[in-house]
Length: 352
Image (cartoon, rainbow, N blue to C red):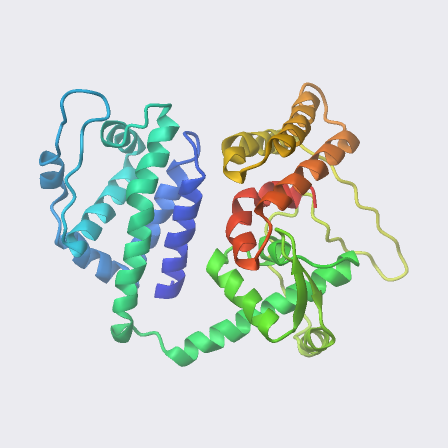
């Protein structure tokens, strides 16, 4: 794992932790601790860890006045020491999630359920650490074995791979392809910045045109289409795309002379996850009263279908209506759309 890949893994784990709840927070912590101890990062994190005494840090915490939520951790002003303490906190949390919950409840009490404590310590400690650690690594770039030419080559390859994926999506569906769909189906390991940089480069080159909506639907220009066709023609016969989960995928293989039928089904677990996602994040959409009533009504329809075997027709109609509301709320400029859509990606993808 290279330094660039390890930092991307760190960022992805933090993003997952932001949207995690009581039942799902452990895995992002494990991934975060693992990424920080990747071979290329370990010499750096070991150095930061050596600059901080975590046990002494906990002993020096303020217990407050005995009132719940009054206890405080006394973070140092030295940046390297603070980074070292946070690395140790993350590692202990990954090894002992119950310790992490107790720490969050004691020093980052939210006044609500335990998930509120998890969200608060994530916002107050983990997210700032992610930002500051990346900045710290950027300052070390001159001493790291990452060449500018190699970075440019990687960016060019990302751009061409995204263009090819959009071409294949459009060819398979007969519709305008989506940058978000391409990421979810072909490049699930890409983070938000990597996807946005590749998409932005294609827009600047006018290889893709007319980006719209939260899913960033695009048209391929004649130049972009020709590039993709040439790449496809010169590719090795056994090209493999890592598509990830194929649940409800719009892609299907139909032999020459045959015809295909796509049947969409919705599992109870998937629909429960969509309902939970909506209830967890709906307030972040900033819907007006009319939009909120419309969205709540669609979610209520989906919930009603969970009483028995879900009717695909009813679920699909409610889901598409809900998707329209969500896309309208998070849509806009390309940067905003690509930044906001990942949280809602399961809903947007399920009802595409």
